[in-house]
Amino acid sequence: MGEVVIEVKAPGEGEPDFVAIPFPEGNTEGAFSNGARELDGRFKGRLQRLADSGDLKGELGTTVVLHTDGELNARRVVVAGIGKKEEVDADALRTAASAVADRVADVGGTLAWLLDDSLPLPLAVQARAIVEGTMLGSYSPARWKTQEKPAARVEKIVLYTTAGNGLAESASRIATVGKWVNFARDLANSPPNELTPEALAMRAAELAGPTLAVEALDSARIDELGMGALSAVGRASSNGPRLIVLRYEPARATREDLVLGLVGKAITFDAGGISLKPALKMQDMKGDMAGGAAVIAAMAAVAELELPVRIVAVVAAAENLVSGDSFRPGDILRAANGKTIEITNTDAEGRLVLADALWYARREGATHVLDLATLTGAMELALGDFYAGLFANEEGWLHEVLAAAKTSGDHAWPFPLHPRYRRYVDSSFADLKNSSDLRQGSPVLAAEFLREFSGEGPWAHIDMAGPGFLERSRGDYLTQRGGTGYGVRLIVELAQSLSS
Image (tube, rainbow, N blue to C red; front, top):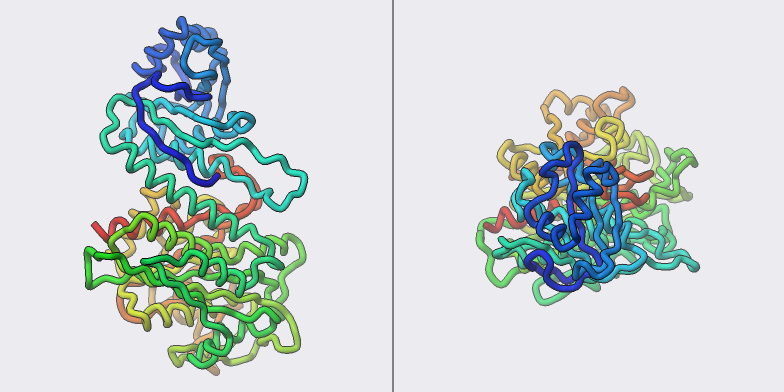
């Protein structure tokens, strides 16, 4: 789904192809909002009769489609189950909107959604959830299929409400973000023979504009800067590494003393190097660049929205392959900040490329840093595919990022950092090692490793191994395998909060 037009109208206005009406689970008496009852009056009470007879289901994600036969301006009504009313949250409405989007995919066109002032959510939150659920739920990863018939697009979303002051503008901004979330998903789903580090840099360069500058440092420049960690990871591949740097300079920044630094891991394919991964599901390792994809897409979203906050983004892109030039267990690398790293596992490569990227972000003036990476399988074991793990070196910065995660729908859960965890990456031969054989606390020791390269000032790390790339439907509004665009909404929300 590309650009989507957003409008706000009084219930019943216009001639949409579909009008969606939220319907809660449980007692049917008073289940419909005032606006829905008004529409049902024109529909000769058919909705209430179906509700009373039990033909309408309120379970979350269920839908019933009715043709109006000219009794309403809309051609069809979709009754959307939203679950128990007292439990409805933004994710529930996203899920309901996704289910509706799936039902209208054969027709597309204009979809009107009736906002319900009886729900325990402000209208602005409802509008955001409906737009996001429609756009993200409509996404298809099948763009490489030659015989695939594309679904009909929802070209316009109409929000039905009588209290919509400022709602259209804010919902349109959410639609802009949704477009870039799906762009990040396209990047994560791209096959590794198509999306090499150089190709990713070229895709990023296409986004450059008046306020967004993009450059890519090649292998030679990476070596000149002493980025021994990034260089080592990428040297086994004929597709050399790239350090992709994006700088957003708004016409006016609200805070001149603040530069948000974003760092993304972009391993465009991860075979594990000499510490070779198992063959099963290795094809999904094309998604090991989902953190970098989120950073690139979020920078484009911020630029389009013209948020008044300065940002520098650094994406470390490489392929981790096997060849006669592979880095080895036992090697000692020197990172750009001068620290030496003993390699004990070549499949712990993400933290290596992030180490040099974090240093570069600080070098370029970042005062507050956030990195995003599909880093450790243990984080997925701990939190599954719904939450990412969040680490930070300052309590205040942790809560700012956590608030952005909660508001945006890119959920995160705080994990501890403590100096005693540093011993897990102590090395007898170098300043530190890149993994531990104790099989304990691996997401935390990875974060402690990164802290060694995070520089001075607030820094946070998001391990998005679970929600960044799905093996199967999540059962909500993210129904497709592959990239989810996790992080784009979070970054935009964080940038918005920092600029206010």
